[in-house]
Structures are given as structure tokens and as C-alpha cells.
Image (cartoon, rainbow, N blue to C red; front, side, top):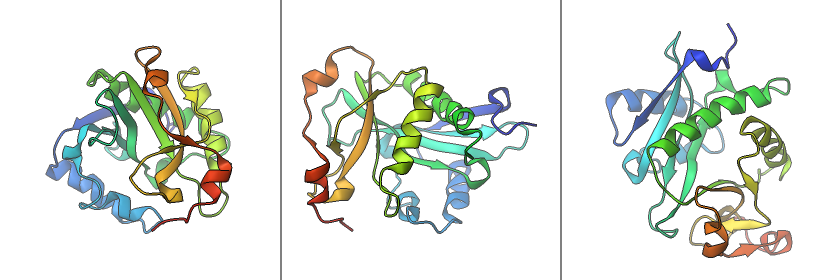
Length: 203
């Protein structure tokens, strides 16, 4: 059985916490990686999302990928982050040989979340890795573009994701205009590599 068989997946979208979702969160928190704190009850509030989805493998019931649509007021009301607090469960992390197929699973989650929302523009952002810088981002963009049939436009520079002048609050990004022209109309603040490098890393 191929682990990225889309016919063997189902997506559930949550709007508030539940025992089912918390069991998924607990599996996520078993991993003690550098982004673990993003998924704690304090830092991942389902209720702050206009839909937080989990892709499950139907044959096993195992969670594969999760993420949500998010705007807590830091963006204009017609703009939202997609797959906010994205997490891929270890068993379903991509290898070099199957990255595009893995991203198709993520794209299925994105499409399901867009069906229950109506924002004009969606962003996907990612901070540089402490080691490796943009290498993972560059690979992500390449395979995501193929998996999504070039749906997402690559942004230039870094876009602000939280209210602090630190590197962690300025991230790489792609965007999708559900309503053409709305990203340019928004005209968000963008900084270049030099501006980003001059900032402190942040906590």
C-alpha cells in the first residue's frame, strides 16, 4: 500500500477542540523537535482558525498532515494564512524520491480548507531553518509547485508574520489570489535578504 494514495485519505476539519483532535495533538507532541512549542494547547488554538484540518489515512486511521486557515486580525480581513501550524507526522514525511506525491496530500488539505473559506488571498509562509537556511524552502517550493499545478506564486523577499522586528517574524512566502489583483492591492511590507539578515533571530 502506497502511503500517499489519495484514495486512501480522508480529511476532517475542526472548528474547536475535541477529544478526537486532542488525541492527534498528543501524537504530534510526542516528537521533541525544534518547533514542538508551536503545537501546544497554548500556541495552537483550533478556535483561532477558520477551519483546522487533519488528513487521515483511511485504512489505518493514522493522522498524516494537519494545518489550518488563520487570520487573528494581523492581516486585512480578506487575507489569511493557509496551512498555519502545518505539521507532517513522522511516518508520512517525504523522502527525496516521493516529495511531489507527499505534497499532493498537503494540497488536498489546502483545497478542502479553501472550500470552507472565502478569503481573497491566501499565504503560505515558512521561516528559514536554524541550520540550512533556505534549502528546505527551495525544495518545498519546487515540489509544491508541481503538486499544485503551479497554483501558488512565489513571493519576493520576506513577509511579516508577527509583530516584532526579528527574523522569525519575517518569513519566506507563496501566495494564491482567489480574486486576481488582491495581493497587489494589499501591498504588504516586504524586506529583502539583507534586511532579514540584519535582524536578531528572535526567541
